[in-house]
Length: 304
Image 1 (tube, rainbow, N blue to C red):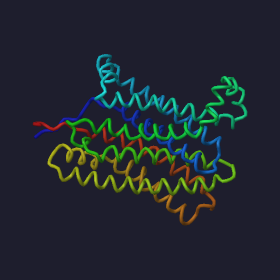
Image 2: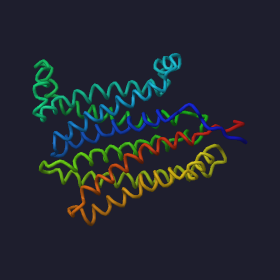
Image 3: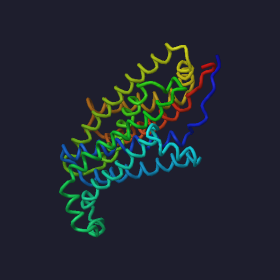
Image 4: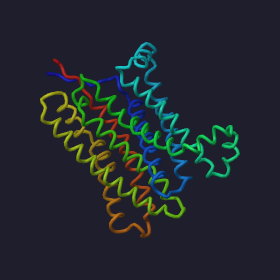
């Protein structure tokens, strides 16, 4: 039995999966905070605008990797392809997120004249149905986040990817990175109530990291007990220092320790902002490393 590394999914796809998950989860979490918590509208609007930017950049990475016109046309016109549904979800995401964020931009005085250039009837509708747009953006963001895992898991020839655990792992990771990004933004907010939001985001991210570790444990337990390419892929990952030290160590364990320490012992002490920035940045880096190395470890098994 022999194994051959896949050479179709490159680092550009890993970047697309990371930015797509981050952008989708950021809008989903941000919209929920806006709807159910008293929070800084400036920070939420900045987060949503940044998330839309992440999605645009990620889509450019995807298109850059799909510079094969025939394959691209087939994927984009075939409803049985996850790329087709990804395009549907992303378009819904752009529409809902844009409609949601426009009224929020009025919280930035410098942007008020630009927002006021929108025809009054349209602006009135956007403001009246802002919460509906927020719910639509949150739903589309979740669909985009989980789609990134479904896209990879639909490859039956690579047994390490072809498992329901992968979409679950990717969506939890996406929401962890989205939470970490919002945590970075709210750490520097001086609005009343922001400290409470930071505490809740810390707790949410810590819970997501623990969940991610549990899913990873189950995922690798599944992989190591199969005499197939899945075991080979798992072995490749555990023999890769940047996966073990970079992702597991610095991308999960250290942020979890920092956030746990902050939650239970030192939230209001000196250096809290520095700790949160460190944890947030490490979680974001870990989110990319997870996707990059999962793609890197994909192998075909011969004979089938």
